[in-house]
Amino acid sequence: MTDQRPTGQRLLIAASGTGGHLFPAIATAEQLPDFEIEWLGVSDRLETQLVPSHYPLHTIAVTGLQKRFGLETLRILWRLMGAVFQVRKLLQQGQFRGVLTTGGYIAAPAILAARSLGLPVVLHESNAIPGKVTRFLAWFCSRVAVGFPVTARALPTQRTVWVGTPVRSQFRQPTPLSSLEIPPEVPLIVGVGGSQGAIALNRLIRQCAPAWLAAGAWVVHLTGDSDPDAHSLIHPHYVALPFYDNMAGLLQRASLAVSRAGAGTLTELAVTGTPAILIPYPYAAEDHQTHNAASFAAVGAGFVYQQADLTPEMLETQVLALLHDPTRREQMAHQAASLAVTDSAEQLAMLVRQSLAGTVRNGVA
Image (tube, rainbow, N blue to C red; front, side):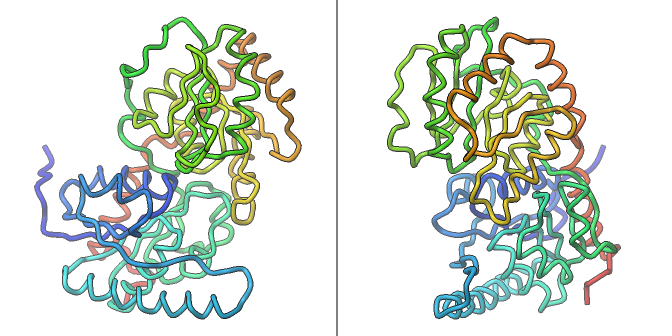
């Protein structure tokens, strides 16, 4: 039996913003019970709700670079420099042995501060198209783990390894859906806009939902907390929630998902074997959600529609066709499950262990 008492090895996890960054980091932290873990985030983001009950949370002020260079860019760079020194001080005072980050704005000061101290950094990039921070700073990291094999083409190959994207442990075991009283025999459609919601997608789902409900389905619609019309549709079989903490149970129960195509969401759909209609967020950086969704479409696990081309009538018809074709949904579910890397969290945790133990030396002073 493995001794999982804290070993005295201290790890700083830098993950902030959306569930796509936070949940893979949380899933990996679950696999490191013998480490003393603390968290680096931003004061007004999702981590302030999810992290403090599990790990000490430190916050810094940091934002992303603008597309056009200007005065605001200089201000952002100045704040970045301040954040680097703040993280550097935290790493020194806390005697941390290394950093795990899942990309995004928070990764830049974490990587630069750790590198200035000669500490190892493991970076995980979940999207098919790596973000700017990943592309610019991957060279400074001990290991770069990626969620899609195609991602490695844009990164330093000698440090890059495909591990998939970690999901929390409840996704990998049967999880009951006890808090929502949905009859077991009815088809269930789940609308997923991501952890921040998606107003345009929400509007489409509400326009189509009456026809789906009339066909005998139930709809659970995760709207996010920024949609002013979130509760405008009232029906006994339509449930609108800003956020639901048992996504594992919900997707395991779902007959079909109508969803954005963030990497974390796609990973959860794959692990739960949930067929999906994917509508990538059109303003995602470098259109990375479309590239993410392509992996589902390529194997027949889902249908992909661009938001600009999709009408309510098209979405309504496609969902109804799948509701009436359980054989097709079963085939899609099988193909979705074929994309899952079920031990991704364990693989990423092992990279962290190796890096902090000094067995991975590339890029570490």
